Image 1 (cartoon, chains in turn brown, orange):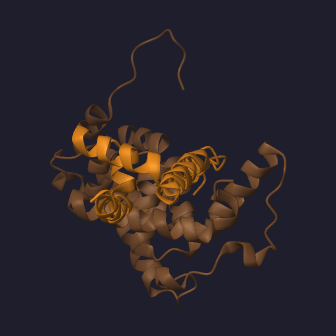
Image 2 (cartoon, chains in turn red, green):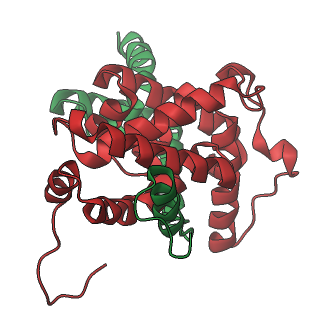
Image 3 (spheres, helix red, strand yellow):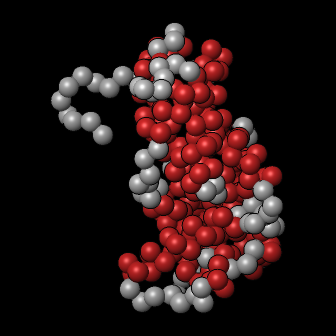
Length: 193
Length: 88
């Protein structure tokens, strides 16, 4: 991200403190640090590009307005994601259910593409990634969110639970159900040979 | 006896497969999973396939070519009425 020389980057916490005092430039730096990643997560969560950008903008606007209430009990990043994912979940749950099916009724994604496990490992890996993207969108929102945050974003169980305002056991349970549902959807790609 | 232990473990392992992969089981539980999957191709395949999925999900993180931060900053300035864009 940065060169090896020069001053150490200012921490999020320090920028938040400055922003709370009205320093818009400090807040802009926070936006520059986190907006792309938040946007990508929101897309992965199932929003289209336009929606994801709208939600990202809305998230930072709300964050700016609520900075005075941010107590720093979680990281700024976790707090930001909580705002963004809450809004995304609200939008997705209002949407006429495209992928909102119960896990047991999930249709294997290979039916959309006449699945053919390729012989070459790299091509197969790309196929799996493409299939994963589709399969993720098939998951019910409450299972998709833990999978996106934990497995795609690589957040810890604690961070993902904090963002989704769940206890850690509930987060783990949903994560496992989400992974199992993905496994059913991705059967042609992941069944050990 | 051995059969019933196998059956018990066969029911016990699948709900804990994610905890096993995430390193959230106690050492004795890890050993129980490992003992069982040595004898059970079905549970072994379950763990392998979940691990493969988790690994592949992690690669989706690299699909991040979008650059929206600049646009977010611009819209924020407009929304807040602070520092309006030059010429605006």
